[in-house]
Image (cartoon, rainbow, N blue to C red):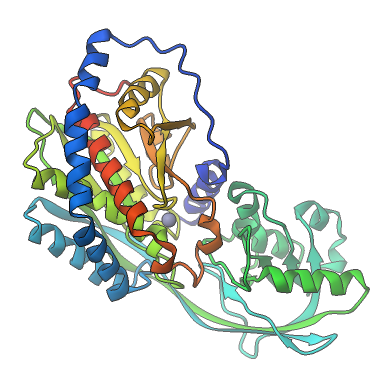
Length: 470
Ligand SMILES: [Zn+2]
């Protein structure tokens, strides 16, 4: 399981779409759609307006429910009691909105609990260093670790350093942020690479393009056959300080104390169905994850994405609309420790994989909506592009081999899908830190995301033609 998780974390961290900065128009000149289908898609213009207006008209109530959820439960770490209470809350909220078709499926989830964490630079002067343990990090031995520090710019520098210069030391990876997809490697693999060279602990420069002395956590996995060493994130400011001190030839000594526990608990994926009126067994899935890291409130990651996804069947039901296919919202559990809920769902529903017509996810922010990042065949992309024309100016299209986080594993099995594109340039300022609170969110933007997602999902779930796999 550890190895599987490690592989999946690596795959998703490297190949997901977090790294995009610019959105290019996809070359759609090769698209040749049946004129009948083009006509059919165009006929949805009025219904999309109705759905979007309904979401906007209910915007205050919707946003209040979302803010209430975040304020009531706060952080919702995988395997925690509060996460299960948050899941119960969403089940009850679904029912109170008149949708009874809500079910849950059990998921065995890692439950990592952060204890106390302190670090102090002892030499060349005494200074407290803010640290935030990375998910699944082991504790330091009782009494902590006091050791010399060696600062590394990147993995290459570590490779080129002789083992005796690393052995027994605390390795600090001072890798500057280029893109999430690239820089996250230091968070995921840093401890393993440092341990392979005999380090006693590893610290990383927080994976963010911007810092106001913030620390950012996230998942990491120990490789097999290495000593599990404690690992944590430090701020840009402290990483820069340590780098400057080392460059001037100072001997740096640091003392670290970290405690944590790791066990397994049962959690649940939540499935909310709006049954189709014709092809009930066929599914259009819209999703977000309900768990979060233990710092901040998980308002942005992924409270916003989870809430707008949950709202899709709810608002379509309120409008008494019945799409051809079943529209299913999934609130994934335990995404943060490594897509645990999504992997369980995939395994459990493997024989129904062909029934998933299209799968969507919102896990990259709910800032101003821009369009969609799409994974699928040329034919699938062409249909999505045609549907997007209904939503101008929310009609940007990006094409990637896999999209989102949880749904990457479905894309890899050939299921076409899309992830919400939004104006999320600041996403990683707040990501996995204490700064991920409701203050990051803007009511109008979140409501617009919800309106777009609901109307788009309705069209896709109601089209006479399936989204083709080839
Ligand atoms: Zn997330």
